[in-house]
Amino acid sequence: MEIPYNVELRKDTGLYNAKLGIWLFLASEIMLFGGLFSAYILLRTGAPVWPPIGEHGSILHMLKETVPHATFNTVVLIFSSVTMVMSWVSLKQKDLSKYKVYMGITIVCAIIFLAVKYFEYSHKIHEGFIPSHDIYMALYFTLTGLHGLHIVGGIIVLAYLLGPGISMWTTEPDRFTNRIEVVGLYWHFVDLVWIFLFPTLYLLN
Amino acid sequence: MTHHISNYRKVFIFLLIGTALTVAASYFEFNVQNSIAGAIFVGLTIAVIKGYLVAANFMHLNSERKMIYWILLLTAFFLVLLLFIPVLWYLNNMSHY
Image (cartoon, rainbow over all chains, first blue to last red; front, side):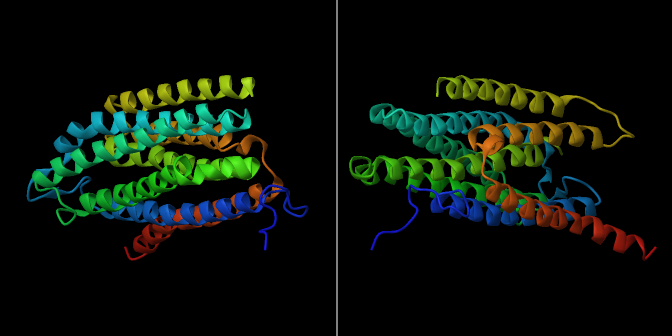
């Protein structure tokens, strides 16, 4: 049995089904991250000193040290959003080889982001700034950890669409192009969350 | 499509400028009654503009179907409600004094 509305648009929604599906999923994601941002505001406004002073002293100095890493990661993620949208444009232009290049760059950017995050986490943990250190560190690891998991999930899907999943291009090119648009929406959302996490966790303390 | 590509390039440059401004603003002393309220306002305003650029251009929200706008409107309503919980908590605490 064929799944309906993979390519053609439903008359009532004006969308193909996967697009409606991803937007509903992103709506739930907005609430997930929104809940955590709400917790952040609640805990920050309730704290007598921000960031709190733990047994290893103020974390302000440590935070300033990691601003260059986080800035670099912001640029990497923004760049990956551009290459992501360009991979979709390439398919619209029926240019599969260009698609492969742009999708490959997107995956490399995602891996670079995680590698920088790994060094950042190692540095903090080595200095004793673990999640139980204080409420700021708990929020920092929860928010960036959840965001990092989204990056990992994105890499898996993007790698599939560059690897085995690419065979759909020969059988159903329009459906494959839609898949790239849908995964692109997810990827841009992950970028958008980082745009808010970056100043909130690294700069405005 | 050529128009789209040049638009994506422009957005990329604006996002880079926004990132540089966010970092620069965090080192700037806004001096609003000895608090960092000014820095938070500036930082979050830039983040909102950057978020809008990503959503409107890369996610194509500047020309989408009505159904998606309705979904997002409903989500925005509940998100605002969620973000207002700390304010309600604060007001509730204030009433004890």
